[in-house]
Amino acid sequence: MNTIKEMISKNILITGITGQDGLFLTSYLANESHSYNIIGIARGSKEIFFKNLNTLNPDINSENITILNCDLKDKNQVSSLLQDIRPHQIYNLTGPSSVYESIYKPELYKQLIPLYFNNLVNSCIDLHMYPSFFQASSSEMFSVENDMPLNEISNFGPRNAYSRAKYEVFLSVNELKREYDWNIKSGIMFNHESEFRDKGYLFTKIIDAAISIKNKKQKEINIGSLSYVRDWSFAGDVAEAIALISHSKDNSDYVIGSGVGVSIKEVLDIAFSRLGLNYTNYVNVDSTLLRKNDPETIVSDPNRLNSDLGWAPKVEIENLIYRCMESKLG
Image (tube, rainbow, N blue to C red; front, side):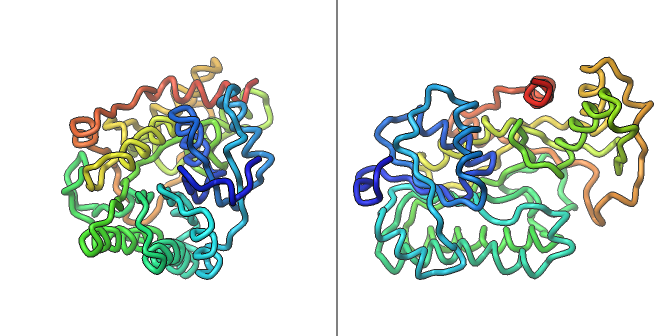
């Protein structure tokens, strides 16, 4: 692989590269241009990342992809890295991302999400370097009082440590773009899934349970509600949106979602039916699993992203569920 000193021309920095978003974004950018040098900062395993990347994109040339260790909590390390690679694009996808975990570890989320962001942008400012900068933001920032669907002018009202930290960063992005005339923007992302999604998220939990029940390794699944509606997209479609937003000359923030609301009941029905099962025989509804103040319906309005940049999701919910299931069934 190339050394850092050789990566000077078109360098792209992706934090959190080993997560599903980083994986699909790397694949998309590598397909888009062979002249990109992609440098990733990761907490996860490099070996698993490259294995997953090759599974996703068998023809990819990984010679221009490098995974580095850099403590984003340490501004000196961040500044030194940026000075070495001088990226012309930064995608900040890192940070703790579990809303449920943030309820039990609020101080961790309150501290780390803004700290990672601030160390990146302040190092850029200190170095008089203003690369195109994409910040991963979250639909969790929206107020529960909004009418659906949610778009770029919907009201914000963060209600947990995770969303408050994300909102703090969102406000900083808009301050920086005004103060420095910087091509820095946020993508307000709704739920998005793939075969590479970490365990513990509801979508993956449902798919894993359906397979385990089919294989007689599990008897039932506990679900907080059947009626809750969410906007689930394919992570590969979201990665394409992220790249389009970053490359756009329009310095706007965008909502990224499918625009389609799907109930938990529908997800269960699709997943279990695929295996010849009736989900009603295996689901135990336990309302104590619900998060306090969680809205029953969350759906995006991605019309601005479609009209400005021509983006539209390609993978519908049924095919997304099948894709995730097939990767686990082999």
